[in-house]
Image 1 (tube, one colour):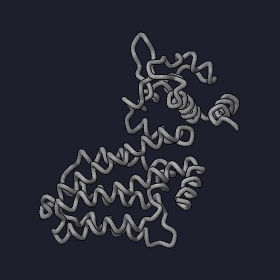
Image 2 (cartoon, rainbow, N blue to C red):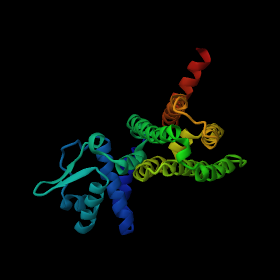
Image 3 (cartoon, rainbow, N blue to C red):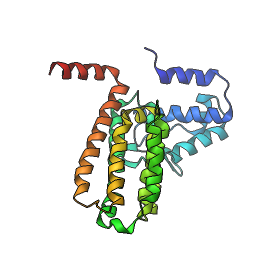
Length: 272
């Protein structure tokens, strides 16, 4: 079987690329070495001169590559030492994880673990907001969230729901809920989190096998909010339901990365 990273390295050296594309491809090659463990935490990244020679680029372009790897959280530049590989599990941020999903097929277990963590964080942010709404439903106006929900429902009612648009519409509903209770800083975290998720089509496919289920949950929440009957005892039951959705998302994501897993699991369920 062809090794995708080796093929890409060969093409990188033999095909003429625009300067911007050349930087992106070199960044991707070096990021892959870190994600795959070929470069371990604490290792020194090759020097600017070595990168320039290996990938046939000029030193100024190699310096840009190092700057991007640092901005993405893969390396830390230490004066007098060089670029040191970071432990991305410990120091990685949203930019790191967003980039990692590009290699999901090569590191399916790591990608699934990161997705599980991101979904858990998303759950915490959304339900922190719902708890605040339930504690004082009269203090926040659901009007903007309901208007955003109308677009979400309209997309779901189309003959063929465009999942990327549907995901963005659901994000807008959640964003309006957070904004309604005045949590501006949380919106920033929420936006970064969802950017990392929505950047990968496989994640969206795994999250939305049945958009009508998401419609039903949000419609129920907004109805209760509008009627001022959403209460704190509703929140744990709702959280349990959504956690079930998220567990199913992780399973579907794994099966999309490793199709044989889906076939084996289906056979096991059929005979079990």
